[in-house]
Image (cartoon, rainbow, N blue to C red; front, side, top):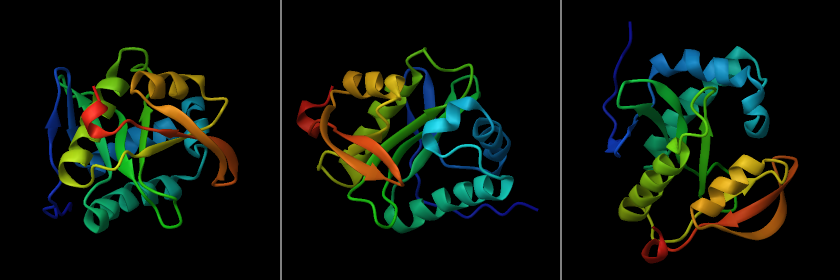
Length: 175
């Protein structure tokens, strides 16, 4: 039996995408992503229970913070990844994070969804420009950050890994 707890999670639509609440039905695709090489920069390769807890934690993040990772679908209903704002305990400040599943990269979906999630965050939560933590070896995420108007701000150790902190533009400067 599945219980649907009503949460005030907005549903965002773009030309090609729907950004929606996390669902139990997302778990299988999250597990497959976790087991793929694409998850290397977001802590992939964990056990099944860890992935389940990540899904549950995201729902809790929405409850506690009023924002979190959106589950992103194409208008055709394909679940293609998770993109949104997160700020876990001990983090410097809110981060705009993204990961797109196998077969959906290189189509501009991450850019489209990240712009929508960032605009929603600015409209509902804060005008302060967020950051993105990006591993220096993750050239695809660096390219997306540049397309989003981000600039490298500093180097730091994040979750045991050396990363670059990229600063997003202020809302009035965001495209």
